[in-house]
Image 1 (cartoon, rainbow, N blue to C red):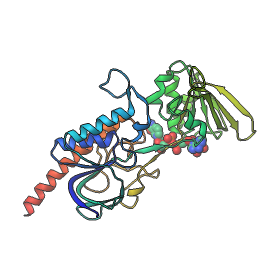
Image 2: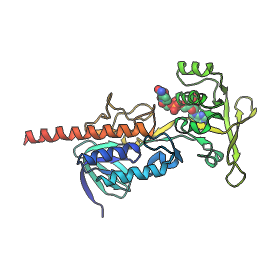
Image 3: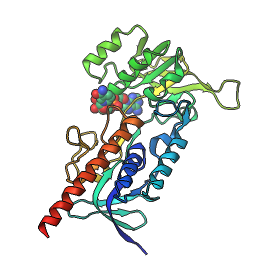
Image 4: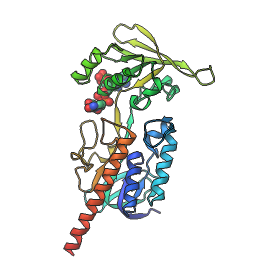
Length: 325
Ligand code: NAP
């Protein structure tokens, strides 16, 4: 039988933004309920080493970090639920979320921290070498390729930013783009063209990421990239150690498309210097609203902001209700 419960604060999603919101909200006595979603822990659960989350002198494992965040949120009083929100109703108060199990949660405030997913090329070789030379985050993993050769796939702002970032660390960077012009902002393009460490393979698509599989040699990992010119058919083989796929992200916002303001790429829009969405009492934190930084630590910071804003909003609401009574 389905169950209905009420909470002052419902948190949807469980990456660094959601867990940080949960910690702050629980410690403010809001007794939050957090619905963890399909992939509890989010993007960091498919990462291996994390070296850029403050507080850990030695590298830590992404899945371990997320387990710790969940335990911390639960230890301070968050009720976590292994389920998926399948429908939301923000038209009247309290807000309502229906879960995949059929259970319903009503809530005075909601924090959305459903994250975003990196787009991948969809090649079997990409999957084979994931976290063994293939990554979708130069800021996270670039350091592991210091003084090595890498490729960045894509032609947007992310690809150009990643190529420039990697050029500061790596011996050589090859940008592989499927067309003969970039989508990135002109000023970024100029920086890319001016960088002597970066080569561009125009009109090229990745055919295969080459490498040594686990158990097949002493040093498993990526050894090269085979691309094909889509105008001439010419194949190019580039020896390298790392491949960064930067072909965009998909924010997990389909649930909110009839309710909340979002930009044309589907990212939730929040007020300046705030996590407030277009509906009062509904907040968004982390990659679901951020296409610029996309870091665990920035997501965590936004989760903190959202919890503080929800707390303040609830206090105002309570004061108004008292006055009206
Ligand atoms: P994007 O602008 O959608 O660019 C994706 C790039 O990947 C495009 O060049 C696209 O090629 C290419 N691509 C897509 N699918 C591909 C495939 N299957 N195979 C090969 N190439 C493929 O994504 P983004 O660069 O991540 O940027 C997303 C948004 O975030 C944009 O609005 C961007 O301005 C913003 N952003 C801002 C900043 C900043 O302000 N600092 C930094 C990063 C991102 P085509 O060009 O041929 O379509």
